[in-house]
Length: 316
Length: 181
Ligand SMILES: Cc1cc2nc3c(=O)[nH]c(=O)nc-3n(C[C@H](O)[C@H](O)[C@H](O)COP(=O)(O)OP(=O)(O)OC[C@H]3O[C@@H](n4cnc5c(N)ncnc54)[C@H](O)[C@@H]3O)c2cc1C
Ligand code: SF4
Ligand code: FES
Ligand code: FES
Image (cartoon, rainbow over all chains, first blue to last red; front, side, top):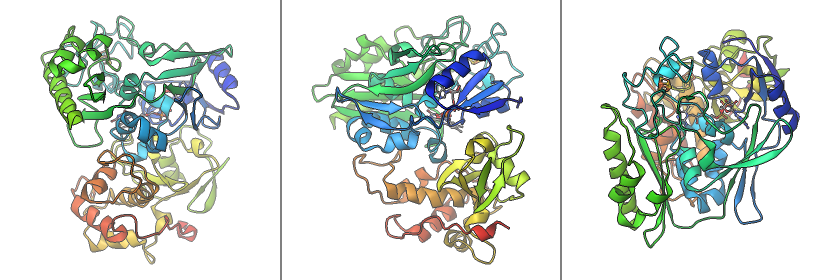
């Protein structure tokens, strides 16, 4: 690990300003992703800004009937919160499907959103990887790509976003709330938060340098059945091959976001509109432009079958 | 900057890069906590921070300034085993023993999480806040602790023997500060 300096931020504004004044600075929340990557010198911040003491660990009702989740709320606490369990079951389900009890006790809402890909070549510093070193090439495209993306891919990168929580946030139309270094705040709909790899796979979100996430807003509850189904190589403590998060209403309408298939949580409005027609119709639209590799072509069928199973479960 | 480990206050390391795991093992010479993978994937390094289970390999010691840490040395001693340690002996909860300190720290806090109503991946009714630690719940909640020897049946039996369904017995993590030496 490279040496760094360490600071405990005293306010949100100070944290953002400090990050903006040093292009090599990083915020540290739980540290469960950042420290892993720092050990391997994939992340090499020269300064860490600890943002744990800013009082952003609360979940509050919003005036419109939704919820405001502080950026530093731990994954365990979010999954266990009464209102989340009752009204946003999909979010609880997605959270407890991820990582382990120990990790969820430390992992935060913002850190979870911003966790980086688990592409094994991204982790292997001896191999070319455009996300790690732009222009070096992508080892996955002609390599072992069973776990990789099938849709929204580019010739530069076929990595997936690994977060389970983000799939639920996408299906629930969450909004990310931020403060920029100049002190101004903005909100970014989750649909605009993540980027596709294109030819800049190292840029993963809409955040600007030094922009700090203060919280995530959920709109008022949608009702309906909430189901998160994660398919993985072992029963627990593994990242998704594919995952399907749905909200389904009694009339069969609903929404679906899919994980493990793209550089971001994958959801398309036209596909949601086909929910009453069944899994084949939905997935036909959702994955119409899929460009799988030989090794991950199976994910197309896997998404359809998983969604089919979830729709049957919802019908009860 | 100080941190409390098993009831004893200790100065934090000057080198900011020291993980909480290396700090307890190499600086405080408490080798009970084990380094399996050093990347969050095995649970061998599980310790308690203010009673909550965390992975000490993915934590900087300085992040835990002012906090109270309990390692396996703080749960029990050779002469006064923690009830769960005793149960691990009685139920063949280990073979090589490398994963054991992490298993025990994890289980002690896991039971508290279940009592607090934290749901798990296999919880059928999310809105209920009482979960029995049946076969599936116990195994899912302990899935962050791998055992290369495959002593899982013994581990599950030891936890079950000590805590039952997780609702009846009430023993908060038993921290014995004097055990640190
Ligand atoms: C073995 C293992 C298995 C895992 N399995 C899963 C899984 O199955 N599913 C899953 O979803 N996840 C999984 N995870 C990942 C885990 O969920 C993440 O590591 C965790 O959510 C990251 O949160 P954190 O608070 O620790 O982030 P940190 O490591 O502290 O930060 C991550 C990034 O976010 C930035 N950041 C943090 N807070 C802010 C903020 N407020 N504003 C702006 N930037 C910020 C940091 O600078 C950093 O770049 C696993 C991790 C491990 C180690
Ligand atoms: S898929 Fe993306 S992250 Fe993986 S090697 Fe290619 S460029 Fe790197
Ligand atoms: S050593 Fe920390 S999880 Fe393996
Ligand atoms: S007893 Fe050997 S690893 Fe668990």
